[in-house]
Amino acid sequence: MKLYYSPGACSLASHIVLFASGLPFDAESVSLREVPHTTAGGVDFTTINPKGYVPALRLDNGELLTEGVAIMQYVADQAPDKQLAPANGTLPRYRLQEWLNFISTEIHKNFSPLFFGKNDEVKDDAWGRLQPRFALL
Image (cartoon, rainbow, N blue to C red; front, side, top):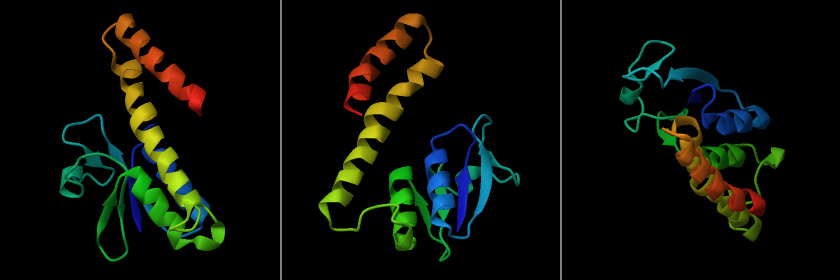
């Protein structure tokens, strides 16, 4: 397997799960600050992942899997002895999916204005939306 990631991006979670799995994998960084986004090897990343963002996992069969929530669960299922995720088809697994999706949609996406907000009012508004979500965690 080969993980395409970018330092400081949300691909870190998939990277951590891959390390924890003990499965063999290669990793290649992607520069998201350039247009087009390029891999460390100089390849236009959109030729690998048309979505243009990380994480992306090239499977051993050649298929590409994207979206951190899907990648983390796929990797966990490849190393069941590591118990990185509850078994498929169980309520605990659905709870895992529930929390991973909450984090990716309600928390992660609301962080962008903190980094890229044009003014303090926009940043303060984003922080205000995040507070009740953090309280749930």
